[in-house]
Image (cartoon, rainbow, N blue to C red; front, side, top):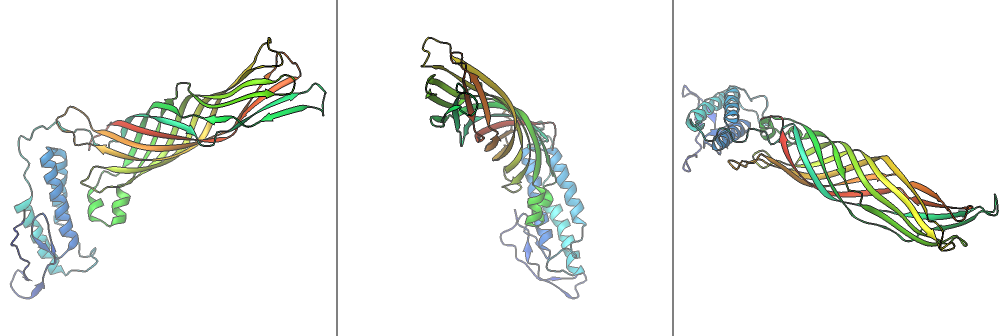
Length: 376
């Protein structure tokens, strides 16, 4: 750590002639002053990352940051500074950067246990995810219509009921595979502008999988007394079978380098949706007669949008567990309407129609996953 008593002193040229100036940017990691704020930040970032790599025994990270320091040490920043510095000041900064390397750059111990820790990148390109939660229709509604054609065309007797509809929350369980594209060079994210930082840490992904609600009933509309003579009664229901989401999205960083990676995921796509609408019942006007029944098995393409927060838990050293991805989010899919008709077995002129209106389904999902397929 830097000496607390270190003082910033005026600097002259190496030959002792001419006043170069007073450096105003002191490195937190070394206590060495620099004229260039960008160079001071560079020293702090790289040395802090190298120390972290040593503490975690991550030799690949250490080698990367050591090489990066050597590259940055000889780089000229005079044309990139918001407050220009002179060539003499830059020369002095480069000398001080060499001094900081000799005096403060950490050495990598040999051996460093355990070398095998954390081989997979927490932001590796692939991840297998288990999801679970619940789904409910936000605006579930429908209608039951009885049509009696006994009196011929133009004289149909129509009885329509739109009351008695209710939606239920159903469970959701499934698995997904995600592929992520992310800039692995997090160094520039720190020493660049805040906009550059944000953009370079932004990730893009595609995701697909399968999920099911195990045939649970999500919609129920009970009815009775439909049509004057048959007096039909029964139910109009929807059951959820399975879904295949196909999604593409962006992960926006909520934390900076050196902190556990947390992202706000925003995405959209489609959901291939298998569900069943059933209309069934009996007729009070024919108490001993057969009932009516029909089922419409639907497979729809539902536009889908979603969002959530995802966190990478990677510092699980020596526990025997891999890095984990945990998160929670919400998805909104837009399902089209449906209709099913059932013919009365007791009254040949009577037909029943059950309709379910278009609706938005909201899913609240938690996720836990394991990254694979790449190392940092």
